[in-house]
Image (cartoon, rainbow, N blue to C red; front, side, top):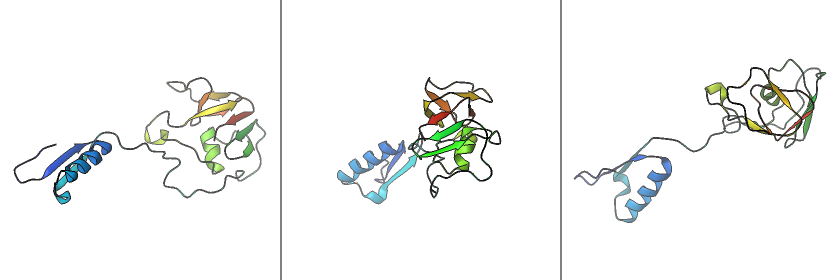
Length: 151
């Protein structure tokens, strides 16, 4: 924070810090119009696959059912037979309008980590850093057998 002689306060930092400092300065008598801020650093957590979209009720994907293992999206109450026409579980979830977190398409890995409640997945391609046991990176995972995901 910089306080030049003209009585203007300049704040620079993360959002929570600047909010707290602005409140403190105003409580000490600073004119709110003279408290300026510039955000840097991390912003609040984002869920690119979940926020900013109109949610539709999860449904079976268009087209014929696949011949593969059953993929159950537990929170959505939907079970879908796997089809090799989908490159990943993320693509299947999106085709079914199942809310899913992801950010891999924007270069941020591991946002799509999803608990696997039962079953096992395989990867294509293999992730550079595998998820913890009991979790899957749905952006590059495919079911090896019937699988239940916490989605």
